[in-house]
Image (cartoon, rainbow, N blue to C red; front, side):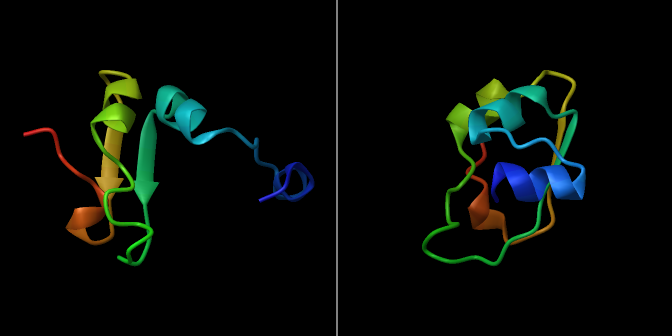
Length: 67
C-alpha cells in the first residue's frame, strides 16, 4: 500500500512495528504460504499492549505462539 492509497481509503499507513505497538485489536486474514508462515512471532507479540487482542482468522502457523 502506498501513502496515497491509504489516504484515499481513510487509513493511516504505519510500519509493521507501529501496527503491533498501536493496535488495540489486530486481526489476521491471510492464506498460509512460505511467505506468511511465522509472520507473527515473539518479537511482534512482545510489541503489543498488554490489553491488546490478536485474532488469527487464518491458519495457525502464521502466528508462532509464545507457549
